[in-house]
Amino acid sequence: MWPQSYDPLHNVALSTLCAALPVVVLLGTLAVLRVKAHVAALLGLATALAIAVSVFGMPVRMALGTAAYGIAYGLFPIGWIVLNVIFLYQLTEQRGLFAILRESITTITRDRRLQLLLVAFCFGAFFEGASGFGTPVAVTGAILIGLGFPPLLASGLSLIANTAPVAFGALGTPIIALQAVTELDLKRLSAMVGRQLPLFSVIVPFWLVWAFAGLRGTLEVWPAILVAGVSFAVPQFLISNWHGPWLVDVVAAVVSMGAVTLFLRFWRPRRHWGLEGEPDVTSQAGPAALSRDVLRAWVPWIILSVIVFIWGLPQTKAMLDGISIVRVPVPGLHNLVQRVPPVVAVAKPEPAVYNLNWLSATGSGILVAALIAGLVMGYRPRELARAYGSTLKLVRFSLLTIAAMLAIGFTTRYSGLDATLGLAFARTGWLYPFFGTLLGWLGVALTGSDTSSNVLFGSLQRITAEQLGLSPILMAAANSSGGVMGKMVDAQSIVVASTATRWYGHEGDILRYVFFHSLVLACLVGLLVLLQAYVFPFTALVVR
Image (cartoon, rainbow, N blue to C red):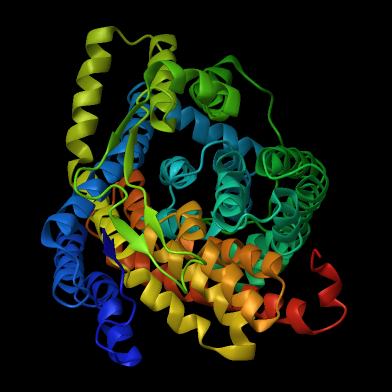
């Protein structure tokens, strides 16, 4: 058993600085030095291993086992999702159906701002609710690039849009995981997150269009943006407070898509907004009739939506896991790393079990959807195999990058680097509601997952809140709500976006584009939580 040490240098500032080095190396080489993403990831991994072993005292074999665990998780299930989404996209593009799908979206609206709203925010929220784990960014990024959006905008805007729904993603998985590590009431946690995020479900669509079209362009379409945000926020609040975390995003996304589509049948902006080089003219395009070709173009994505939703149901997952899952305890790591107070209330070993859920994984559902869609589109088995091989070749460097990124995240977690950073936030006194929210943001930026961030810092949030006389429900929920804004800047999501938009090698550009948006929105969530902690009437929103 190896107990973690959170101040190995016996100097809080120096220990925290060392713990931050892997993140500094990773983001610095990406955004400042502009090296290739897989090179930056490998440099970050080397730094994380060096700090874990030489400064934090982690045994070498254990550190290497941790990195291998992260690599395996990066390839499956995360890389598995990316590979199969791009495979489906390639199939539709080769048959010319993506061009038809693009035209069908323009029959709803030719305005690029409203297309962005429908695809990135509404449609992306559905995939976040159904599956999460990178699926929405992969799908919406591919669609936006097919619609003609430049790669930077398609990547960055997909990341900005994939925020407000994240806490309830994958049928409530982040909240369920938060409950497991904090032992707080699940429905109270769901209700608290549902009293924080609806405000941002209204803000994010405005923010998204503003990032694309500026203030003037946003004001021209504010009625449609308001419809999208409110029609998502209201179901999000109601379902999270009176039902639970499971169906929040799926229902809210369907309501929002329907409300915006219906609204656009009766309202259009006066001026059409095009991409650079497209004319800005008076909007005259109206809804067109649904043709047979349009239906054929949408069939693959309808198949994908239905199968991913069914695949994500707890009953389906349990059934598929029962016949397929293989659990592999990581040799030399499982239950051999001990988390100690104050990160946890009582010292306990950290499990390290690699779940090879090859059948129930979201990526497997996407592959099944792609194969069914391929047969519907008239592909022969040999053609499907050839297309899959070319897709694998296309995303090979992205898979390497994702694997290395996850290896960094796992190494920082099991070596205690992440907890050292977290404890630095916990020393902020009465400002802890603000900085505790940013701790959730940091957790997602490090791990790439709101679920992982909640597992990582949920217990710390509860312990610190109780020591400071704050509501543990409030701070545990703040970890998840603040974490959603970190989804923009986590390296895993950025690589998924660059792969989906076929802009590999420009991850640093994407990071620079989204970093400001991510940090400012996270600070706004922190301010809301600070008000909830101390200022009436915001305190009335806190679940007791």
